[in-house]
Length: 278
Image (cartoon, rainbow, N blue to C red):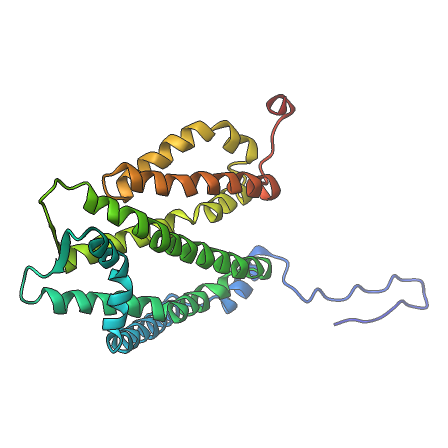
């Protein structure tokens, strides 16, 4: 590399050699030196998947030791509804139903217990391909998404289970008792918990769409009435076929939609023409 500042005869100083290649071919060669080969990507993915699967199995085994306590907590709202109405009981309809149901409970709980490790493995796999600015954005989004999901599940357990289950029992004709299957109850309970957890992700979805410039607060305000109809349709598909569950799910979604309008107003990158703003 030349470092001459100038010559006595007035000849301009020689510019330093460019430490980076200028041609596209040379630049491509440099990129290739730092690019991970496909097989290395596959090996890295396999390693992350193995760690995630092993952690899930360990979580399932650990949770199976407390499966009775987990099941009692999960079924407590329904047992309270049955005791309050005095019109039903929890039962099994097949010899292996009790064991298989408890095994599924341990599986679901194990996945939840291992979710931090699973999320960390996913992050370690995708993080090398992100810019520093994107990495700083991911962390608060992950925490927000986790908080909203847990908030939706807690709302479902404390509100939906407490109010909807007694309603389900009471609407039966007089003289009819409910004989509830363990497996059927677990299916309904996990479906409701998952549905509410996912539905509470609405602000996160709005944030991504706003940052991508696809929507802004004016779009969300304009289509509010259509969104309300869509929320009731989604609620009808995700909850049991009764108006109480649909209202209890659509209500929080409408509130979260309002929160999404504020988020979009703050974060949207969508550009509008002057004619559109008028």
